[in-house]
Length: 218
Image (cartoon, rainbow, N blue to C red; front, top):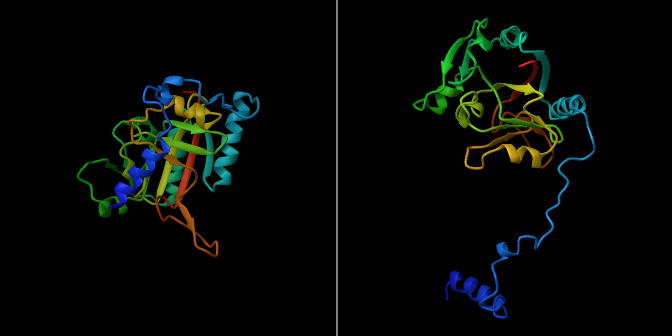
């Protein structure tokens, strides 16, 4: 008897006392109470944004705040301080965001190899939504974010979050805004891992440095 036969046999025995005409689980609708809390506490919009900034920093992301008018200058400064010579640009990134940057633009191309992406100094993207309670930013592959791999291979990622429009309190609220059919990337701080002795190593599965810009006024 194969492993498959054993498993199916156990399933049949477990269902032996279930009437053939019993309705499927989904037909019951309210079989399980799904009245989960959608947020913890009652926060103002300002408090929600502050919580996001606090939790992003707790995950060792570098947080900046600016207005829409200040964004081009801020991005130029951040790239210059990093010594960025090449910056990867998603196809739908607003052109004026990097209008003053000196770095050479590298466009998101399907033909780019991981080795070529690894040579890029920085990547600048927008985001789909940001979750205050968990300090998480979510990318969904929209034009201002590009392919998933462009935010996983370069060592430095600058992500712009539109405040308050893209900020939500909780994961349930974020899920309501996201399309599960899209390639979702959930990011809580720079990529990091720890060995059995809890020695932290950053940059293992993605960017070693994550900078998040909370941009208001757009």
